[in-house]
Length: 213
Image (cartoon, rainbow, N blue to C red; front, side):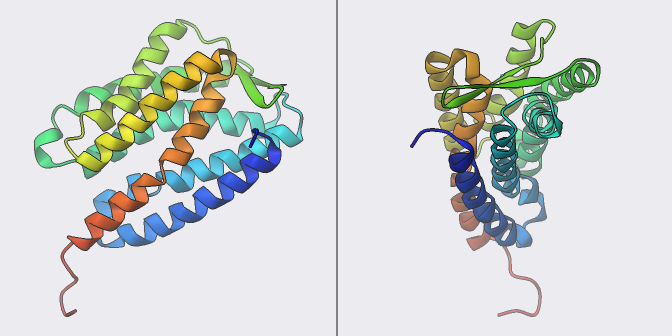
């Protein structure tokens, strides 16, 4: 199925619904909630992109909302969420991707506040343009914050998710260079469904609240 407004809307709705389930399952482990909410966030992100399609791209509110989630928010959210959920032994090394995410998010937020982000419909994909300064360094910081934190998490389920997201990044860079960020976010959204399995397994080993058999 080609990407389109309908595809983004259907996929986003389904992934967001899975995210709601994930958050519900994580109720017994509050430290897991930020990661459990990631499918919900990414599902909403795809729904927002459906609005970008509907508006034929441009630089309107939907485009801005999409960029805010894709760029500064995820750069900080992912490493912070991984740090919360990671085993104690991994938390010190996870400060590195968290720091990278904080710096990257700050730069991206400033850029979004001072420059205009635009979206362009390119066949069956969407290309976003922001004119990032030092784009190469920002990409390195972003990848270290997001993929790096998952791979360094010390948790098999999160490492698997990190591998899937990394593969999606490579495929997107090779096949859709000009539309890289949009297609990679779509890959990440679909891959995030595995987090629900991760949450369910964690829930199975979570201690029951006092007074319940």
